[in-house]
Length: 192
Image (cartoon, rainbow, N blue to C red):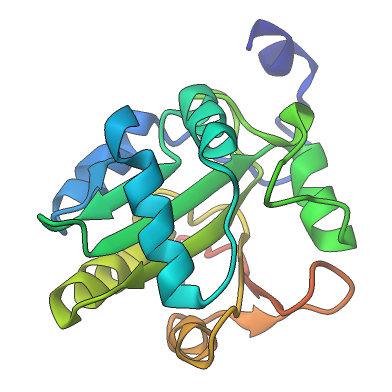
């Protein structure tokens, strides 16, 4: 983590310094909690059911979460909603945009460790099995965008028609040249 802080050009491009505590505060407003290690498998299984496809392996998600301290979230008892978010480094942002980022197993150099500059955010999934869970994850997505990650681009893929529709509602736009079905929400300036 120290190396990341010293080699990152904090003036060259937009970045933010959103702490895991800030993200946890925002998520908590919508009844989302950081998944406990014992909940990672169940949370990911729910996500796979909701999108009808595979997500990253539990050990990969747990490792990324240990590095970022803000990657895997869930809601409900039993678990009814999932939110995966990966803050990325400057190199990670370039990888997302050029298609070399691997969401299923991201390179360590692409992941922004906790409490270091964040140059972009990749949302792996935000989805709910119930109306309440869907509302929670959608409200959290909007709040995070405006109050934690506004200075940097946020990326997500339209895995489902509902997902693509919700991203368009949140102000995302399709981005060509990167990962398949990639959408981006451009940085939000303070005067918008």
